[in-house]
Length: 112
Image (tube, rainbow, N blue to C red; front, side, top):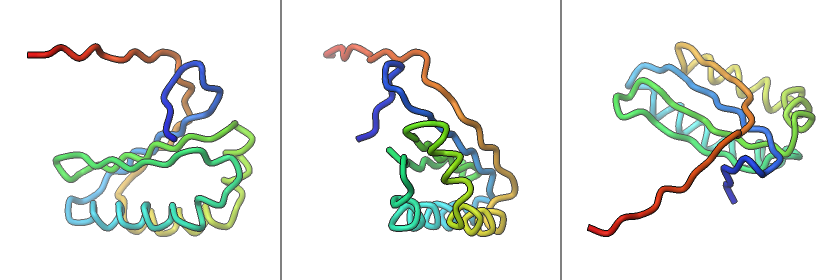
């Protein structure tokens, strides 16, 4: 289950990919396919989500790991090296950064 909560002890990695609009869906398809057996079998992977910009120029990948150590171990795996090669073919640029959630708040729904 995907949890975004400052009390949850986990590491979040946000990848932002810049793509040509005609390649946006191809990158999404690749990320979703790779999430299946290869990525999902990596120890410490808690959640994996993919978002697309409405202008077709960005893809955001939000990944939650159990710890920094789990991420570091995954980065050393052959799965990551192969994924990076394919991503370079599909994305013009990408930025990857680890984050820690420090604050969350649920909005109160107001009836109309």
